[in-house]
Length: 149
Image (cartoon, rainbow, N blue to C red; front, side):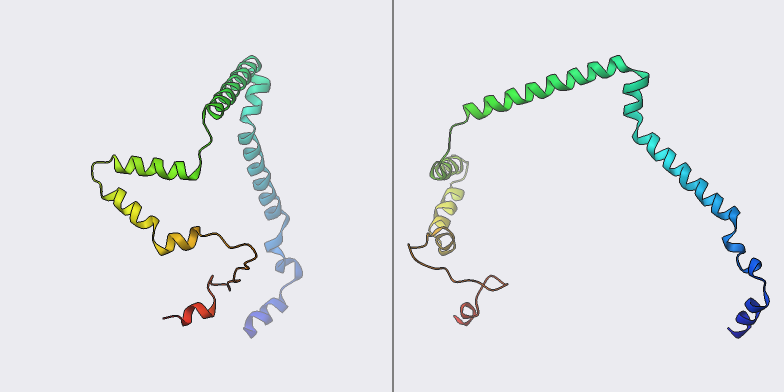
């Protein structure tokens, strides 16, 4: 280590700054400018095509995109107007009908059994008027819940 310090002390400042010469800086600036030119030109191909190469085609493409957008809006509006409002109980009964019409009746039985399970009751029960729920801690449970056996 001391030898390197002595050698560095014996060198002239110009020799120590050779790594930072103008040639290297100019080289890396040229590389950076070249990368920027390539990226900007690659990202501008659509603009160049629509503005300079094929302006008539750009107008046609824009009209086609606008027509497609209008058609999608009309389809969405028609679907929204046709679709009736569905209540949660109707959705549940529809799911039960679909599952009961399946080849095996076990899925309907499973749905009916789970409908009355304590987990589903706990999730779907409503609070009484004036009832303040217990504020859980970070884990979502309170310490008193862990004491129950």
